[in-house]
Each structure stands twice: as C-alpha cells, then as structure tokens.
Length: 211
Figure 1 (tube, one colour):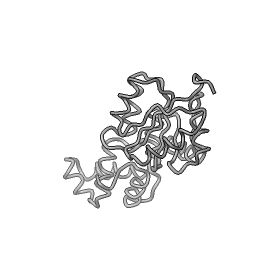
Figure 2: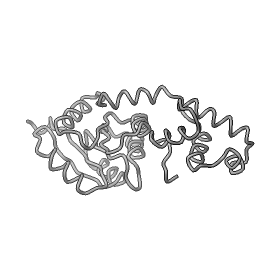
Figure 3: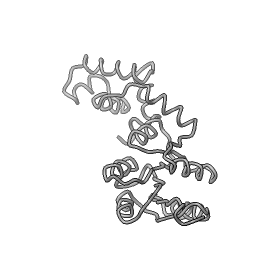
Figure 4: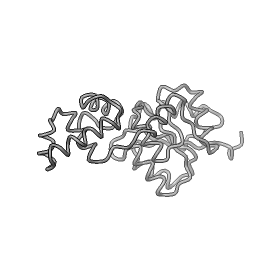
C-alpha cells in the first residue's frame, strides 16, 4: 500500500505494557503506521505538535491530564486528528463526557484486533464508531436531565451517609432546601430513595467513592 494511504496512529496510555502491546499489534497491519506512543496527555500534545497524526487511541484515565482533558486540548489546538477512546472503563458518565468532549470512537481494551481496525478505519473516514451496547447507554444518558453542580455536591454527601440536617449545616442552607434538592436528584436519576440515588450515581460514574 502506498505510504500516502497509511493511517497514522498515536497511542496515548499511561501503562507501558498497553502501549507496547498496541504498538506491536497494530504495527503489523499494512494500512496502519504507528507515529508514536505517549504516556500522558501532555506528552501526546507535544507529539501532535510535531507530527501529522490521523487517529489518536486515547486512554480515559491517566494521571495529569485525563483523557477528556486531552480531548478538549486537541480540539482547542485545532489538530485534525480524530480520537478513539480506548479504555477499561464504561460507566454511563465516562461515555457521555468523552463523546461530549468530541471523541469519534469509544472502545474497550478487550476489543478484538478486527474490531479495533474497523473502528480506526471508520473514524478515519470521518464517521463515528461506537459499539451498539455503548451507543444505547449513551442515548439513555443523553435523555436524562443533567444534575446541577449543587445536586452533585449533595449526592456526594448522601453517599457518605449524611442527613439532610448535616448537609444543610455544611452548605449553609435550610433542611427544606436540602429536601427539595434530594427530591430533584431522585426524580432525575429515576430512583426510589436517597440510598438508591447514591448507589446509582456511583455506578454511573457521576460521583466516585473517594470523593
């Protein structure tokens, strides 16, 4: 295949074994050319500045710049590279944030080589590649009302087992205002009570247990 027709790939992942594995696996494909691999979003931006890249395979969770932050930086810089998120994570919120930030593809790391090549070719031809099961969850997430920053703050407190009174005291608002926020959260998440709201929020990636 002529050099001009090669799809130039940049692999961005903080795990050396993943970078080496992807480089080795994709490097054997006649239609692909691995331009380089980067251990971080910051390093990826340097390579993008210096090289012509068609498709970026981007990990979602990395120290420093996250996958979503890197995506936004690529967009802001005006690079023409198209981005496929390649990750072990697939909470509804992870998928939603990545697509909102401009990802053209979303794959899990246990994807077969055949599907990965298909995704690269599809995204390179200016189309989106999101597997059906992930696309259906994305559609569901997009239909749900977004929680406000205040509601997310209260959700984090609910997950720690705080009462309305404790939350109100911490935020400097009345118990009644907290109750209204909690009712709104329950309605938006389509759950039956505050405990289920906290559990559902963690499962969907809206909040993390560490927080």
